Amino acid sequence: MKVTVSAPGKIHLLGEHVVVYGYPALLSSIDKRLYVTVETSLKGRLGHISIISPEDNKLVHSAVEIYKKKYPAVDFPSLKINISSQIPVGAGLGSSAALSAAIIGALMKAVNNIWNPVRINELSYEVEKLAHGNPSGADNTTVVFGELVWYRREFDFLKSIWTLPVLSYKIPKFAILNSGRPAESTKEMVNLVKGNYTKKRRLFENIFSDQEKQVKKILLGMKEGNINFLKQAIEKGERNLEKIGVVGERAIKIIKYIHKLGGVAKICGAGGVKEGSGIILCYHENLSKLKLVEDVYNVHLSNISLASEGIRIEH
Image 1 (cartoon, one colour):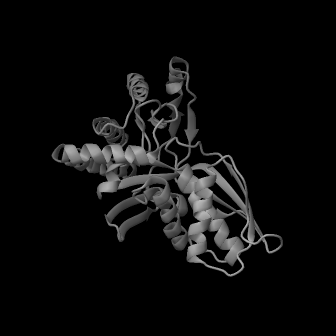
Image 2: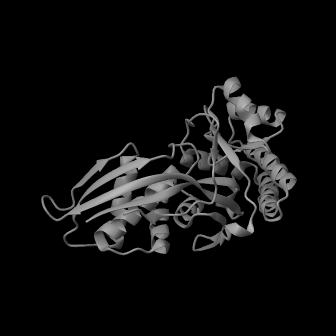
Image 3: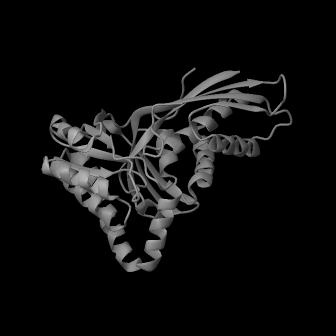
């Protein structure tokens, strides 16, 4: 059996890092996708895996092993796995979450001929834990269910997940640019924040509480079509990310320049401080005015559409 499954990338409108500590995050799927084709065979060496991929093969093998444990079979077929992606790796756009979800989904359909997004999400989270240590679960939830997602982890065993009705929100146009691939992994950045939080708990809890206010403000801004709310929340949210130490100098300079042009911007995802900080989300009432940043900082600005469809079977 041959099956192709795709999953979208995601973007944190706000709430990255604080979501690990039980605060809310607002995420959206985006119109860049990762595709996984799985072809099964009971001929040749059973259980053999052949992978054609520019992605992390270690993560692919981890996903297969987690799937096998959940759906054990005496004669697990050999697998030919082909992966292609429009999502840049290590940029904060959920490439590992999309890969985890698409692999699990493709295996589920190709090997067992079932389709269960809730179970795909659960198993994707197990893969994400191997990759990132202590992820919130927000990334995999967003790429599986798509659209706008309000996410809060109440306990390890209880997560509040709301897929928001897109037609009820006025979602403006955004653009993204890449400040450079971070030298640190997501896991390293999560641990960096954890270390700082342990040393300065009261300060960080105040920052986290304010970030919750900004997350809510972004949602209200889109609900009411209040662009000022949206811009204020993005600006304050970025400052909070800088305060917790996840934004590098180059990204800060780019973001300040965008402010001078009348826009607002923030990093998305785990960030990075040694080199690049990954993707920067940008907003301006007239996005064409932000084109100046391309020449000044030698980056490429591209428009993105939010709230795209979640994981799906292509064929």
